[in-house]
Length: 364
Image 1 (cartoon, rainbow, N blue to C red):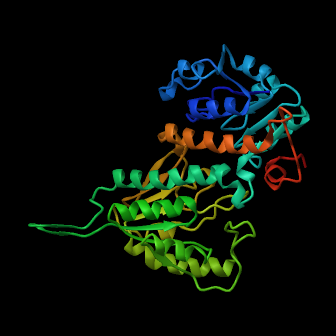
Image 2: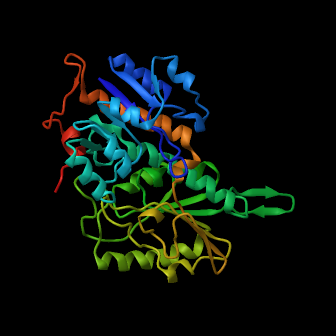
Image 3: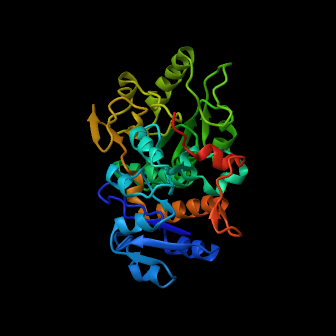
């Protein structure tokens, strides 16, 4: 059985699905591996690194797709790539089925079995496959680094002969994986950090990292059975806006990370709320590609409003492609190892396995 991977469009996506380390692990399982020529050259990884461990280098993406029983990608294949895929191939990646419905339908029509790793259940056995956590962790770190680069003041408190420089105040909206990493990174840099989330369970996690948790008093259940945040009531949103009104006046940097699976990002910061911030402040919106948590956010743009910088993030992992690829490739290996039967030398799509059943996209 052959696992293959082709180059992504590096103007949009610099991550790769197979690193030499993960390819070696696949070969260790008894699988064959092939990649397209100059597959990871943009990351400084020469084809020889793959050849040396037994990976076959193909001259074109068409050769890879025609040869492979299972194809791994970062993003959903293009229409042209779908045309080349063999019938009955298995496809694994971050396929974003809600955004790419037309492509997914074409894939299923070709009897290709598509697995999207964003759909993995939040269970202990799936932790090593959790692409959302591995990539979000990096996003939370990078968000703070980018904000510090844009912020025109120092972050930690400094006591000098000329006087004391106060520490910057950072507010993190959304205390999932990205938000918690942002809290930890900002705290390490010496900022005064607070965070808020609709899930009450986040309070202990934020405080364990040295942050202050800002909460909205409420009685409604704001968490799904899978542990994700869910859309809240209008009454909750009103109370949340009141809490934000006071917090935004005090904070220098706001990092937005709030997402609802399968839906547009919740709009938490209205135009009026953003304008409460001091000139020189920063709003960094990690949710910009999903519509944004903040007014004025546009993916891939920095917009200035009354001296406040609103940074809309786009393709953030392209700024950390090597680390992101290493983690993503490990997630993929863990998933495929669970899918592969070494005894039968075949991929076993056992729908009684919750991991396989939840991540397999079915046509509706």
